[in-house]
Image (cartoon, rainbow, N blue to C red; front, side, top):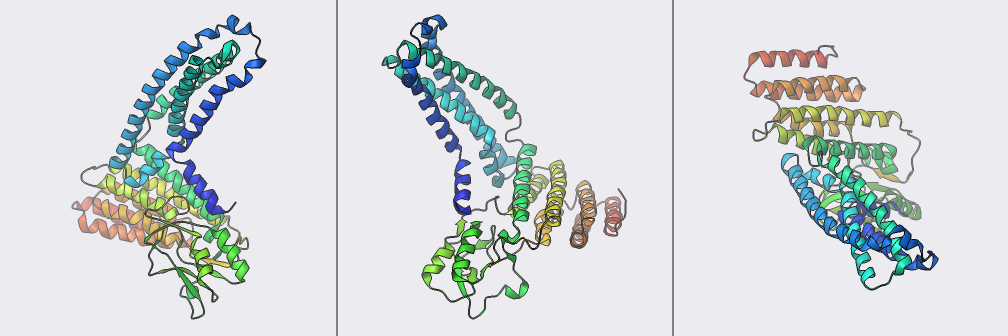
Length: 424
C-alpha cells in the first residue's frame, strides 16, 4: 500500500461521519445477531431471566438517544464556532477531528439504530423467545457502553472548544508533523542543494494543473518512477507550498514524455487549504496566528500569546532533538532531491507575528527575549536566528513603546540574552 493511499484513508477516517457509519453498521449487525443464534439458546432460559421486558428498554434507549444525539450535535457545533471565533478558523479542523467527540456521537447514533432495529425485529416476531434473550443481554451491554460514554462526554465537554485545549491540539499536530519530517527528512530523499534549485537545459519540469497548496507528496511512488527511469527527480514543491500552473513542482533529470509526467504529477495532492500532516510550518503559522489574534485590541489576551511562546520553544526543541538523532546515511529514496525546511523558516513563522503584534506589551516582549535566550543554547544555527529575532523584536518594541522604563528593561534583557547572559 503506497503512502498516498494510506494518507487518503487516514484523512477519510478523521471525518465525523466515518466512525458514525461504522458504529451504525456494527449496531445493526449486533441487533440482527440474535436471529442467527436463536436455535442455540435453551427455550426456558428466556423466562427465567426476564427477557420479555427488552422491548420497553429498547423504546427508552431509542427516545433518549435521539435527544442526546441532537443535544451533542448542537454542543459540537457551538464548540466549532467558539474555536473559529476565539482561536482561529485554521484550528477548527483539529476540533472537528477530535476522536473523543466522534466516538461519542458514533456511540449515540449506533445505540439509537440498534434499539430501532431491535424494536422493528421484535414487532415482526423475528426473534422468538430465545432471540429475545440474546437481544436482552446485548441491550444490557449497550446500556453499560452508553453510561461510560456519557461520563466521558461530560468530562470532555468542559474542555471542548476552549482556547487552551484548541491551542494544545495545534501544538500536538505540529509536533506530530515535526516528528514525521525528522523521521524522513526531505521526505526520505536527499536535500536539494542551492546549485540544483534551477532546472538545467536537459531537465523536464512538471507543473500543477491548478492553483492550491501541496498537501501530500507520495515520495515512495516518485522514488519508484525514478528507479524505473534510472534518473533523479527534483521536488521543489514540498507540502505547504502554494503552487500554480506557471511554476514547476519539480523536474526530472531526463527527457521524458507526457505520460511519465502525468504519473509524476499524480504523486502530488493539491487542495485549496494546507494540511497539518506533512507540513510542520503550517502548524507553526497557526500557533502564531492564535497569538496574534489574542494580542489584537478586540481580544486583548496577552496570556494566550505567552502560552503560545512556551509552546514554540517545545516545537523548536523537538525539531532540534530530531535533527540530533538523524542518520545522514539513512536515505530511503536516494534518487529524490527534495527541498528542505530551514530552521530560519520556522523562526520566522513562529515569532515574527508575535513580535509585531505584541511589540507594545512589556510582558510579551520579556518572554520573547527569554525564549530567544533558551533557543540560543540549542546550537549555532539556533543562536544565529535567536539573535536575529531578538533584535527584530527589540526594534519593533522601540518603535511603539511609550514608557521609557519598559523599553530600558527590555533593552537590557535583549542585550543580556543576545550575549548569552543569565538575566531573568
